[in-house]
Length: 417
Image (cartoon, rainbow, N blue to C red):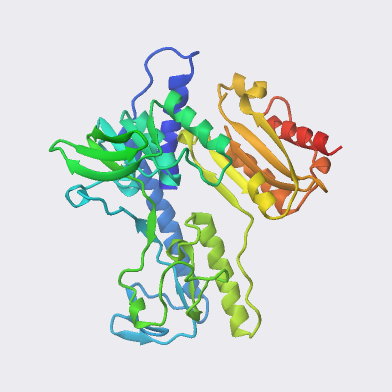
């Protein structure tokens, strides 16, 4: 939520800036006010959640302890001077920003996502390491705030989970609409302080080059928050695959690990769903019943393009569908093909529908366009309920943005008839 609030500021400025029907200079972003309002709202949300936690103590058998806990043995937890030996333990300690080791990094204090969200001043220029979810979301915010950016991308394009056309579309948008320089197929080699900034050395097919900037932004992912938990005193060994799909630790089926800390899918709503799954499985295990895997339909959203042009994926891509044994047909439509996107000055982007060629089942959707995040909910229903694309009504109100979906439904249906 905090990042989405600051992104909304960038969204408003971006839309004013690019709309040639509006005259005058675009407004500047008041960083002090952005951060203050973000903090006010975050505190309000946090207070509500804290209150909800305390209300749990009204339930018989529930005790709330506000202190630090650590393992001292298998399922033996120490909290202050007290020791507990519960039947089950749930670990939900979240994650923290990860900054990779790089020669020279010891002399650099990069700005992470947390720093950016709290920043009331920003540099004139920056070089960005990390172009995954966090980088894709924060780069347009920094650009709209006046930072001249160079982004390091290790591959041909970002958004690995999408078809190549979507990563290519995003790079074009960032370069042309936000003025961001994106270097592809390059890798960081070393970094040095220049006294008044940094110099990052990268290497690619054209050899080594140096990028000078006022600041280094490290949006290089997150790591599970495990320090201080005392896991070394238990049989649990964190690492790849250390938590199975029931949310139980593979080394101790009575310890459940949910949210970012399990390093499976660090997304907020997924963390909440994992919590529910863990609770159900604790009850099942206690009753001697089989535990159920948490295996949701793929449903991701990246608030790209200052959240004006978000990317969403629900279910399969053509590639993953074929790997799962489906023969597929696809329908692809550009946002600009529908006049309503043009008249709303939202011309960028595209969407793609993946359908089973044998029975018409809707298998997946990818969208990088205005309101792709909200349209993804409709596609979630179609995918999870395994609906036949030919049975889905294609009657959006005219003129509205979901007419883009109508076009996809008609095109896919026509390939089946």
